[in-house]
Image (cartoon, rainbow, N blue to C red; front, side):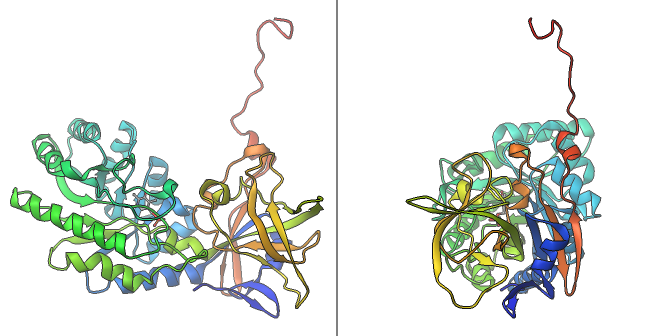
Length: 422
Ligand SMILES: *Cc1c(COP(=O)(O)O)cnc(C)c1O
């Protein structure tokens, strides 16, 4: 469900025609729908109604300040993975006590910043990290609220690059050793054992793996209780998929799968949804530069590229491609949709059936809200695209298109001793 729909064969974002946005702001252009973002948050909140659950938006999926503000105002907390993300949260006035900090490689400076900000908890992923957090907290003279992220050792059936809950992934502490880790944590100074966390992967389209993970963490919580370790929070991670091509379960079924094994556990729950909140609330609008025919293939060359949206080559991801202006009838063509970057991996789609397109046409890559702009780079010295948010009949730019000056900021032309002949 989203608010990108055709009216008179024109693709609208809510009540704004996306071709007008492209004319006014240029391409490639990320367009987000505020109504879709709000709706997704509400539907997910409703699914967890009746349980004590805090929704911490996994902001790495889409982290511009305006989107963070929108979710913060709706009561969301945030799942962060770096000090940069922490600072973004603080910049929009987020409640630090609703922030959890995930990630396998937190630096001392990041741990210190999180403790000083007073976040809800640090999700610790290894024994040495546990020691570092204790040490930094001792130095600061504070108690550090920590949870251990357990790797539940299961296969969520998603792409290997976004699967995190398997035994040989770098994430979390081994399932069989969680008890030992907590026992050790209890002996370290300045640690408050606040919770247990897990996150099994991303773009998961069945409820089974969530249910299995919930059962496994329920067992750990009981075992810890028997050892006299009482926790406050159970962080169940994110990972619910969206319909790129496959059909994920609705949030209500997801909530039931997670909460079923945990009904009687009596802890506060945290979930860390990223993609499901923002994925289909954003599109990437791009313009056709050339239609190139060879004797074996047809290429639609557009002005967006892998530096704008890397998911197709990174995850073999499927993005639906729609014409911004739909012509009725006409034959379809099969083409690779590619960008200008000098890499064979620079494609949005291969062997895709599209309506007839010509130079100047606009295309929309659907469901580009999650892991789209946030992964953009300046490769090939391409300025990053502008981001605009639509709200009803109005739109506002939330991030300007980068300029050449942005590209070279911080660079210096140094004079090298010895000159050209050295
Ligand atoms: C990326 C991530 C999430 C969000 O995953 P989605 O699939 O976008 O919901 C949640 N928690 C952690 C720890 C993550 O790394």
